[in-house]
Image (tube, rainbow, N blue to C red; front, side, top):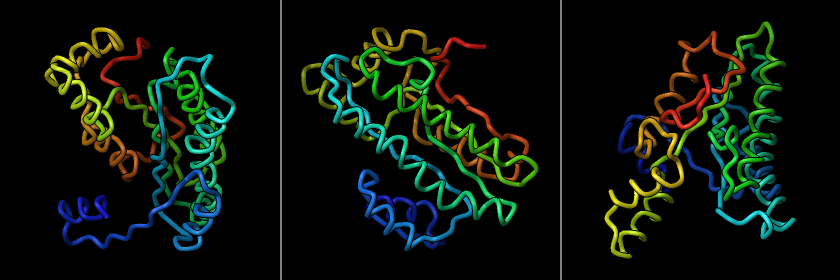
Length: 218
């Protein structure tokens, strides 16, 4: 309901329909696909993360992360991708992460699933040859999501300002960032909007970084 209200606030003329789904529950995903049988643009933006020492990541943790972070996009794409190919038009965009290229030591399970996501996206792109369908990945860097903002507020409650907490995070956890601040969700959305548009017709099978320069790669 909150997401729907936010969209309508920015685009009041839009027709918005929301369906709440636990993407770790196959039955709920199947119900979603029954309610929404076709789409022109699919943005696979479901994901969970949790810092945890590698030795403490259980089999259940691994399976949950793969179920939500990887299989959610697989299941939706399996429904919509063939229809896009048949219509010779469509966009699939996976929201991956720079952690898929630089696996974070504190979240090996998360990084692994994000790498797998990149492989799925590239594999689907290979199947679009000669069509008007594109499949790409967007790799955000550290982003000021709702979860991150809550984390920063918690630190602020411990005597640190938001600015101090942000500075310490980039100094200690992401020193390679050229931006040295959290990316805004709107900055990520700008890239997604471009890839979903006709302007990006020649961009296919790409992993596009919106990471603030975190990944040291040419």
